[in-house]
Image (cartoon, rainbow, N blue to C red; front, top):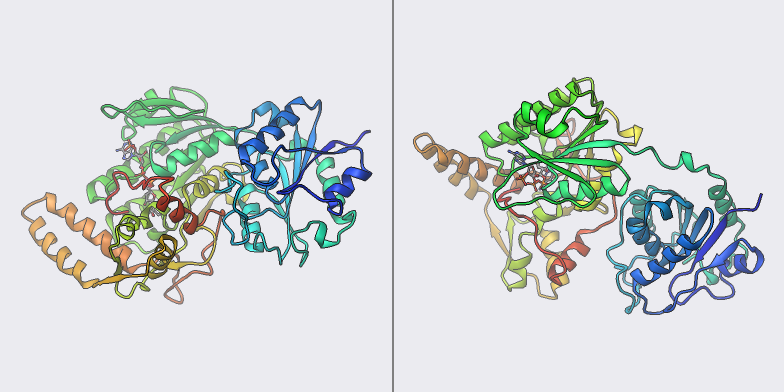
Length: 509
Ligand SMILES: NC(=O)c1ccc[n+]([C@@H]2O[C@H](COP(=O)([O-])OP(=O)(O)OC[C@H]3O[C@@H](n4cnc5c(N)ncnc54)[C@H](OP(=O)(O)O)[C@@H]3O)[C@@H](O)[C@H]2O)c1
């Protein structure tokens, strides 16, 4: 049987004669190089278009063999390619992916950052070296985690290119042979029919995108809001009242078969009454309606802070988590650390030349921020990753934990301004909470204000990291990491105006 064709995708400046890709091309007629018009200052989308055209035109299955920047092209292409084109890809060998936000990355190429970090819909193997100037091994590992790739560390081999002295690179050929041999059925789990709530929120929107990318059929159940016409690409939208069991069954589930529920619904205010109504009661109605409709799996977006519950919304979430765990459904309870939007509130201040506000000295708390898309990817893969079934899953983003002071220092560095900090005493919250609670006894609306101040105090004093109940401390090292999008690249994009602050209606989270 003729081996499956391998498309060779070189990185910037093409692969020279000593590069293993060129050796393979010379010695193996089943390896074919894809030729780009611009090798020095390309647009990622142009490279992806060449890949798309080659896959579409090819008759039969292919394996992609990418090097350096072309790995990003593969990830970008996989996000937008047609199902028919994706179905032809047996696998991808992703060698020495480069980090377009890293210090050695050249100026000129565009569209390679941010690196698309969704799970790839085909089997893939990332191969990385420990002394690659274009990408740290940690970053390469994070790409592999996000792409759902196997990971191979080849030791100190530089950029795994012509200078690495690999010749025909037999180890690489063995990996290619593995990908060619892998039957397609083993690569991807079958898609599911998913009932989604909270699809209009920050994480919900990203999660629908991830679910659709994975090929799931998604029905979003949203509440009607005046002047809002919800359209979610790739998903069906139904409108009703998520807080009422009858409406969930009648207007949402509609007597149809669904395999899973994904809930990113959460109180938009965190006020005591709304938190119990949404984070507990509405979720309970959803769970009961889902059970009655024969749904077998439930993925819940929760929060890491419920491990030390002091606030109304945390108690409400915990009570529902407990109900879900004993429901008999297969569950994944995802408890993330801080979202990017929650620690971006001072970007404008810094841009305007104002000082960065610290609680205490700015080292009271730390978190491992996770991007919307990375968290969405994690949530979406709970549907098919058996190791995440029936588990509570604390999750943070890549890299070490950052304190509030470090967030400020990072912002000033990226904005090119000298750091300026103003300290705010935490005791300030105690005074405000005390006054509002007292007044709330006679003026009920002030009770919510007191709760918001208590939420503010909580985040000023408690870390968003895994809590070690024995040692009675937060443990950054024990807090799992997922994904590859960094806070630094998010801040840089906010500062450049490429993206907007998405805190929306959230005042305090
Ligand atoms: N911010 C952080 O750093 C952080 C960290 C860890 C965990 N979390 C947790 O993440 C959750 C917030 O996620 P997010 O920022 O993506 O939320 P979000 O943007 O505020 O979205 C909330 C979603 O819930 C829906 N919803 C709220 N009340 C509803 C109601 N009464 N009826 C129907 N739908 C309702 C909203 O729909 P509408 O569009 O119709 O309002 C929206 O789709 C919270 O549980 C929070 O504890 C946050």
